Image (cartoon, rainbow, N blue to C red; front, side, top):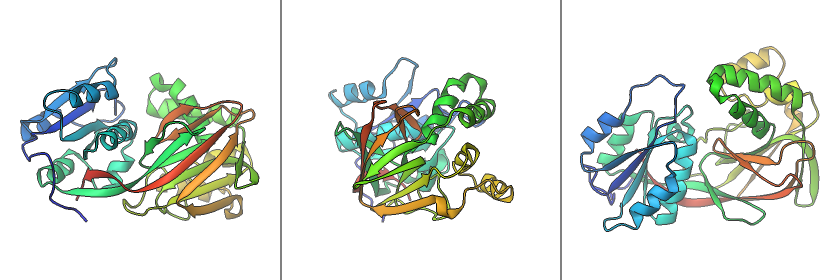
Length: 316
């Protein structure tokens, strides 16, 4: 439940808000920065340039004479995830203002636009939310807000990133065509059992049992991981079809009989999931919150753990 113990003031005093200038370029929306500056006149609001590093800016502010008592971010899931990690590191709450192409965490938190975010902040409404931590080969954990994925989704995302200059839709279509031609399954070993899979999704909190690609979580306080494995029993076309997460797209694919049958999927609900991934001919990579991360091509151990009450966010 929300509480009224915000360390920052309703006028923005104590808040450092960073805006990702490159987020949401393919989305038509009014720039919320003028409204944010008007309604939070004492907040430190800074727009990041292409050469600015989110972590460096926050570290410099925290080392200053008047360190921020809350962090805010205007951007999509990738920016929000990185800022959430910094907020946890410095022990301060997070204000999320949706501003990217995809805003899955913001929507899950009931923050559909800048007005909703500012209303929660000025009212001092804080919620403790479950997060996850992912690490590779026992390395430094990374904060996860929505999901971690192996297999065809990282392969698709890598193809889409290469075509980013073509725009969201044209680049996405080109990525699908390329992935259909080049997608390869991955071998995953978990608790002594090895499976060959097209993809794995590890979501934060229980999700829709009829959906495989869990990009957006359903709840903020379910302290488990929802793991979905798509076993490599069908074609590349069906493997790509299983990545659809929009309801309309899923409905169309089901009408076309392209969605794999339920027998091709496996579900596990747990607080901790650790597996050895062997990419084989697939790239050595994984995705968390839409961010593509490189991993050893020779194989790597992926460790994901649910963290109850791991982050405080402004939300109703």
